[in-house]
Amino acid sequence: MKRSLIICWLLPVMVAVALGLGGCSNEPATVRGVVSQAQDPNKPLDNPANAGQGIAQAEVRFFGLEKVPGGQGMAVYKKGAVVYTVTTDAEGAFSQSVDPGVYVIDVWVNGQKAATRQIEVKRGQNIKLTFNVPATP
Image (cartoon, rainbow, N blue to C red):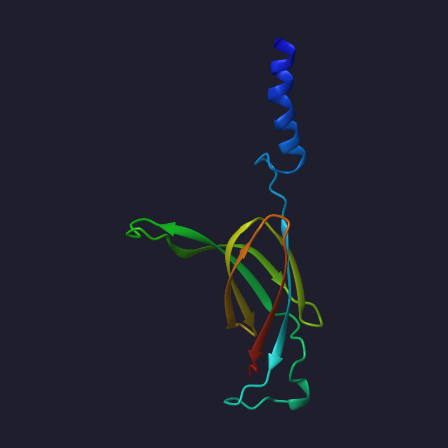
């Protein structure tokens, strides 16, 4: 009798852990993307042939979000600290392994913030982003 109770209790727990439902798994996700120069009608490009070309050495910063108390029934968040930073390669590509959560991503080109986006990342997810930014002086 005692043995069957242990098996009845232990079997569902073992199945849940094997399927990743045990709550202990925090499998990281991957965020990949490209930062490229976009045609901006308000700013002529230095070299029109470079429109759409990847931007090397752009800095991609991932900020965590912090819950602000007193949201009057709504969850209110503010941008927190930088939790990940990655630099684009020669083609403007980047890849970063991240924990599940909500992030604000800022893209910096030549010392200036060029783009911002908020994303939600789930466990094991692979996200592909494209940041088209105006030409910088």
